[in-house]
Image (cartoon, rainbow, N blue to C red; front, top):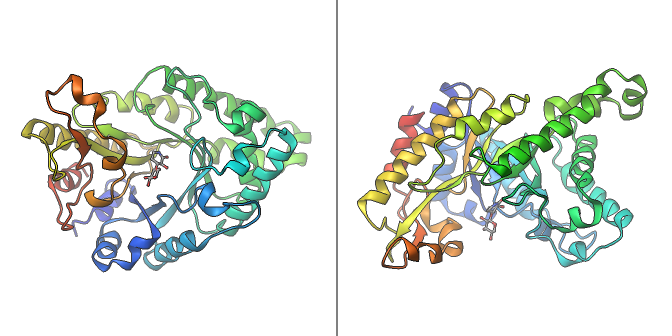
Length: 351
Ligand code: XIL
């Protein structure tokens, strides 16, 4: 066997995951790769607030149900994604200004979503992208109405419903040692420290039961999104991961892709960027394998045509570096014909 999940498992019981969308499960060529190469699934959009609870109290679990059923078929783990974010959250939520009401809305949502899947999901990105690049809190309804305590509140609500689920904070640009990852480490330490005393102060254990005890072990893992650019993937991923694993937190890579400038056919713009991309995939996988607290790597989709990259990164920033305006793309492991690319083989090799 040389499938990615088999190799990842052999390389220290890691999982090799991918984001998928429920509608793709109807494509047998797609599911054939999914089932043979990956053993962890993240719903790319299906669990986001705007999809799951578009209007108050009306839940749509159809997409996630399909994904969870698929995962059960093959024994894959599922990573839930996400609860508190500044994006893809409906305006009936983002327009709330009363803290008590916002907390109630958050609790109802968590009870419904996490309650439904409490035995099905191994991980859940509870808080997504909470920090600005300079390490301050991002402006979103959660922070603006509840202050920084929203993070702890959401984690606790989730843990109450699903005591065995591993709960994560997920963010990008924290894969290198910088202001943002340092702020994330400070935030993590703060969250952990708040609960460390609770192991020995009886009254709190009575009031909160095991939820406190588990906070150190289970709550607030840090997800490294890892949306990289070929040639500028950080060289110090291990050092950044260590900031969190030293605190006892797991450091999964949650949304890996390596985008490069492409021509109109979503092919690498030149040989240099193609080579940089392959090297960066190697570096990323090696970083995970080099830290025993990294449980696995999830790629954000696996075939280029359904990658989010071309739609979002149209290359405006590249004008300064290249005479031509390139778009970014070709970020994944398989091409439009579902054939493995050099990026696939380098991941295999790195594992
Ligand atoms: C992206 C999806 O891939 C797109 O389909 C959607 O239109 C927008 O969101 N960080 C995250 C993911 O945590 O949820 C984002 O997913 C990509 C960036």
